Image 1: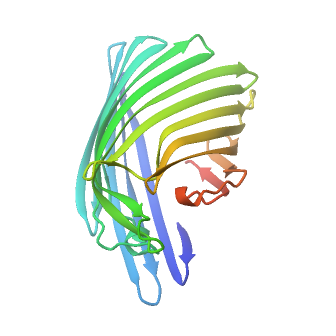
Image 2: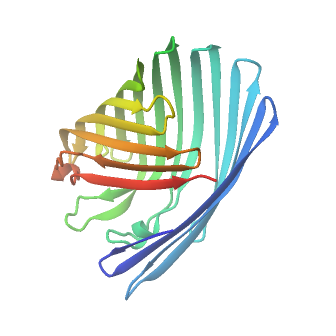
Image 3: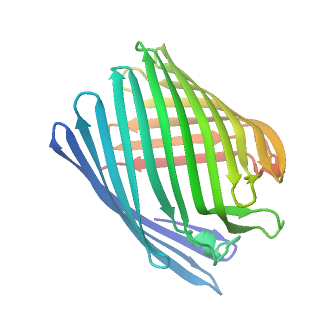
Length: 306
């Protein structure tokens, strides 16, 4: 449960999730669960709340020594927007122990949140967001030290929920009737020894408003990431990750921008049940108003698994 306030308004969020996994046999593992969430906003003029729940199930089915199939389905129900069922299926084919091809097709559904419907920049006429997409990826390992991954993806959304900054300062959430994204991701990872790992990423993204045939605002066409990660080698209870991220051809207000930020996070684990973390995004407090880049962000949190 969490709560926060905006002006004289108070938002409350309750969320509970449960899942379990059953090993049906050596080649079949079934996972199922559910989630319930209730959101609310209350002030002198508004007293609104919404309840939603979801049920999900997926099966990891190994067919022979090389093929793994993962069919899944998710059911969502929202008290204002009704119900939606979203299927998903994934497959992994292993050519060798260190070489594999993965394919995935999935559909998604997201109802507007209470803050999008009744918050500071709210729009009570928002519609749920629906998506369909697929991705193909190839993974290759070179010995025990180096691995590469190449992924192609394509997605289409109906009524995507996004912020409309065009009527500044009267910002408002809106639905984008039809949009799509297509791109390529490349990653290379190398183990340096003594707990150190270096990772490089490049993402190319073409995000379009299909109704107007224009690029979507607030998306970068090119994103580069250089990451250094250290995990304490003996008990592996400490992890420190630092990374620099560069954006180029970042579209905002019909103009392209570039920026890079430095970030880090520290994780501490106690056994298999408890974890805490603290980190800073955009450590050097870079700000670009047109990109809605508002500066340094501190993050702290804790996790318990049971």
